[in-house]
Structure formats: structure tokens, C-alpha cells
Image (cartoon, rainbow, N blue to C red; front, side, top):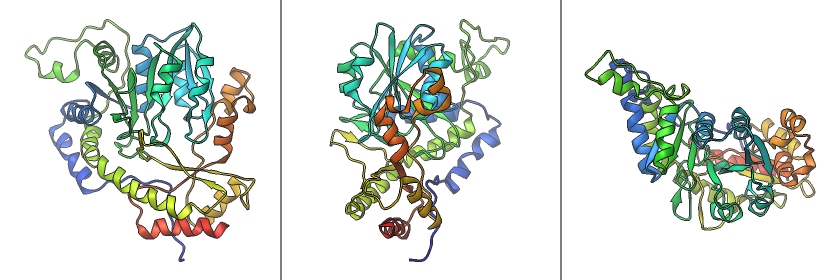
Length: 380
């Protein structure tokens, strides 16, 4: 086949998104305002939650969740050892301790059989990461750690669900990302969701410097001399209306994006099934996958080359791949801070060293998917 160039991911943006930003640009309302509120309402409805708060990133969504839950010095938070580093970083930002738990390499999510042994009297929360768009097994987590707060790191999981319940409404809070590698994007940006009214009130205040009223309420009110009072020390984690306008358009396409990806996932499953050294994603009917990424595992005992060599060969063919993400316990900072060895979390180490994401996005066409499949088979 003729060589093609296929990136690991590309956002689908165009004329609709371009036109969407005209209104805030023309109105002059560029900071958080009516478009953000509209985006929040639509996101809450889509994910069947009472409250949604647009913020600057999934990282700040996670941070707000921990602050609202009262996590602080002396507390412990259980974090999967295989995730993006911010899942752990926000725990340290609160002065709490990260307690790593291994993952199941077959799902890349937290190994629920090992959660109970990580729980102590200091455990105040569990970061339930829905990696690559597959929800964590929330029921198993709740059985292993009853009464412990659950923060869903659903950065990859917009549109995903577990036993019919959308991501974002499974734990105490849900945290989403709109980075360009996610299914829907606002460039940068995030969302916090919750069904808890008390947490919602705290999050709404904390993301806006701790102000008692929003910018929109203040500017549209009848008394222009009123400034907000500040009862707490908050943060500037507000999304802009430019981003909110794009988010409204993107969210309306989410079902279409996931359905298209699901169709090509089935193609990958069928066409790649006979490559014995390549393990494909697998999960039960309890889960609706969001398919942010299609992440495989390379079995180097059967493969003709190492994972890294295979990735290099695919790159030469014009196919961009990536490791799924990283084992956080193997990163220099955490390895030194907690005196952790790579082998302390074997599942995470396997995922770190052998996972390989292959292209899956909505700007790929039939010829692109065929080229990926044929290129992988050529390596055999």
C-alpha cells in the first residue's frame, strides 16, 4: 500500500466551531459567562448529573474535587499506579499522601482486588480513573472501600457509562478533560460533575477565587457598586466563553464521534485478532466504552521485535503510536519520594513497558484504518 501519514489523534473542528466563537467575540463577553453556563447545562444533561462546572482542565477539576472534599495534610488518597501524572500530583498539592494501587493490565484500570489492602484509617478518597474511556469497576471499588469518597478521573470518559449510569455520576465527583486528544475538545478545559448539592456549592465558589457571586451575576445585577465577599481562599479555574461556545458544538457531536469510533474498533478487533503478540481491549457488557484511545498490549515473548522497535517501525511507515500512558510510580519524582521500585506494581509496569495506542480518531477514513491494519500485519 502507498505510504500514508496517520497521527495518533486529531480533533474534529471546522466551520461550526469557527462560527460558534463569533458570538462571544462580537458581544465582548469573553470570560466565563452565558456560553459556559449553556455548556455546563448541556453537559450535565448529557451525563445525567445535577451539577456541572466548567474549569480550565481536568487537573484543576481533580484539584477542586479534593479541596471540596476537605482532603488535606495527614490524609491518604488511593491512586492507580498507571495513569497520567496529574491524578497523583493534585493529591500532593493538598498536602495529602499518595497511596499507589496496582492496575489490571487487561483493563488498564485499578485492580479492585487490591484496593482493600490499601485502605487505612487515613484513607479519605480513591481516584477511580476511567482510563482511555473505560469506566473503572465502581461497584467493586465501593465493596472494597465502603464509605470512602470516590473521585472519578474521567478525563478520557465523556460519553462512557457503567451499568447504564454515565461517567460523572458514579462517584462523589467526576472530572473530565477537553484536551485535543479527547473525544470532544475546547483546546484546553475541563468539567467537574456531582450530584451532591453541598459539594456543588463549594466547587462553584472555589473555582471563582472563592467569590460569593459569579462574574455574570455581578455584572448583570442592578447594584453596580457591589463587590463579592470572600469567605474562602479560592482559585481562578474558570473556563472562558470562547471555550464554552466551542464546547457546546463539540458536545452535540459526542454520540456521533463515539459511534463512529465503535464501528472502527470492531474493524480493528476483527482484522487484528490473528496477531498473536497483540492483545486487544476487552471488557464486559456492563461497560459502555468512550473510546478516547485504542490501547493494545505487545507480548514481547511472541512478537518479532520489542514494543519500542515495533513503534519505531510503524513510525517509519507513517503511523503514529504512543505508550498508553505512564506508570507514575516509575517516574523519578515519585520513585524517589516514596522509595518505590518498578517491580512494586507489576501490573502498572507491564502497562508502562508494553502498552501501545494505535490511531483511532474521527478524522481517519477507511483507507487509513486499512493501512494501520496492513502495516501491523507486515511487521509479522
